[in-house]
Length: 114
Length: 115
Image (cartoon, chains in turn yellow, blue):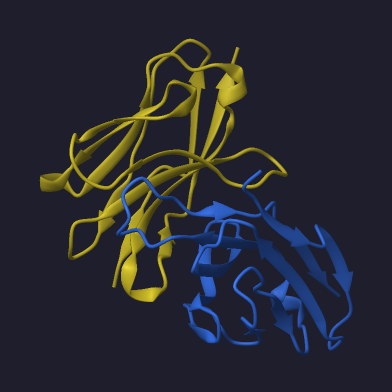
């Protein structure tokens, strides 16, 4: 079965510091990969996605992610974190077999300290 | 504006009282899903639909029903809610991921409390 692991439940970084959120997936075929962000009390906003092609993907709000097939990873990065980036981040893999199901990781809560 | 609309946003109900959470999308998407979000578990798929009158169980379907009589609407029905169904619910819609440059659109969520 498909699965997504986000090893870090909480991460705290200083404003202006760089950020990397880890994501590992288990999926048999070429994966459709996504990163979503959820601010407190809000819905889910898509940051970026990978379907094929260039393995370094640029997203909104200055985020990028790199697909590494050999490591089954899709880590999210940002060179300089802003206080407004504090939120919960979800990695997901898309499964065509079950109605375009998204299999989500448990999420990583990002805290930004000033 | 492309959107997925869920109603209500917040709902407190009592055990056993039937309720329906509505979901509507205006993008002509074939695929629609319901997810529940629980702390530490991420989002898990409850039911999905691949088109009108085509629905199937997701990972956590017990205690829920759905219907897809029109392409735009995909209501979630709790016939006899129980406290373990207290959760944050999201509806999502999309074209097939086989289409490049597509994504799943999510509603704003429905926070349900069953007492």
